Amino acid sequence: MLADVPIVFVLIGITAYTVLSGADFGAGMWTLIPGGGHVDAATTRDHTRHSIGPVWEANHVWLIFVLTVAWTCYPGAFGSIVSTLAIPLLIAAIGIIFRGTTYALRSQFDRREGRGVALVEDLFALSSVLTPFALATVVGAIATGRVPVGNARGNIITSWLNPVSIMAGVLAVFFSGYLAAVYLAADARRLGEPVLARDFRNRALGAGVVAGVLAVAGLLVVRFNAPALWHGLTSGAGLALVIVSGVAGLLTLVLVWRSSFGLARASAALAVAAVIAGWAAAQEPWFLPGLTVREAAAGRATLIATIIGVAVGAAVLVPSLGLLYTLVLRGRLDTAAAVPAASAVPLVPAVPSAPSVAAGPAVPSVPSVAAGPAGAGRGRIALGRPAWAFAVVTLLAGVGLVVFAGPAWALGIGALLLVACAVTVFALTAIPDEGT
Image 1 (tube, helix red, strand yellow):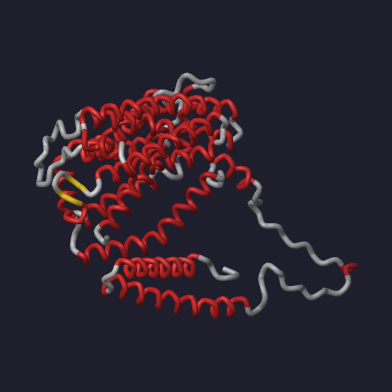
Image 2 (cartoon, rainbow, N blue to C red):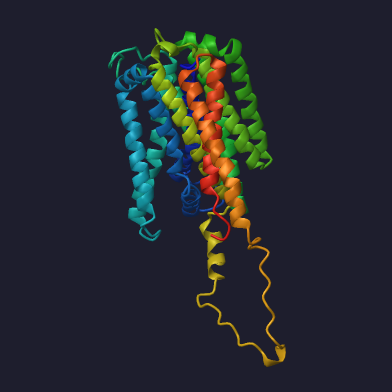
């Protein structure tokens, strides 16, 4: 059981990266083909660029997380994958670098600098399309068993350029565009741009239909090119998860049609999670051909250290990303909305007026209710002491159970205690004291 925990982390990371970064990559697709709507192409491109601004770098945390856990906990399998699939992984890495570089450069150009702006935006768009295609071909290669165990044992071309991998890459591009259109429509409506919102709603419906057709076609490609994977996807848990994904996909289209973009985001995420979980169920217990997940796992000490690290890191990372996404979805980071608020602040502090003689004797000021009672600070310190003690106890107990306990239930309790410790410490250090 211990060997299966990190692979669950990897699958969660792949799901998060597909949903969150997929929407960012899809914004590049609409930068490449911004026409077809009622709003001009320049406005469409500017909207896509501004919408992904606060989160485009943060979403790559999930890719780093997946790579780190995979090479730490399954080093042999990871080496086999990156050596056989070096070309698509290199393409994806170059695409990510070019995408980040061109996004940063675009902010240095004025729209009137036509040639420079067009070149930068085209590079950004092409890299945004190329990266998800390359990453999806890697998933296709692993799912179809084209990565043998060993250093560069597989064919460096046909391992990722095969019907299933190519179909996976094309599906990833259109699904990213679909997700991006849903997010961009919601952002346009929040910014009070109904025409732009209608344009992206129509783009979302079109891309969603295309993605659905490609998903059905992809199943037929899998049937004739990967019989083992087809059997896993059409029986047992794999079939149930495929059905869940299909229902969630149809529900997402209905929600987009009704302009319920918030719920559409959630149902789209469910569809992605079900597909990835279905892939894992179809391939279980194999990691690579002839190599199970438990055989590929590193030693017990490495797995325990990774689980502890992920539990502690999640208590900091998840609330931080949750706060970031909440601020973005509520429009708190919109540049246009921040300007009026900033302009309302006076540049010169007000000078207090002299007291009027007719006002009578000065009245002692009453302490502000917002400041709290005089002993508020001491109260917080008193409350903090048992919380710190709780953190220390849960840390020691959690480490003891995870390191020394044998049964699976004891390992689970140890992991929960470590999470409780991390959450407590995060709460104690993140919330400022009164009056600061």
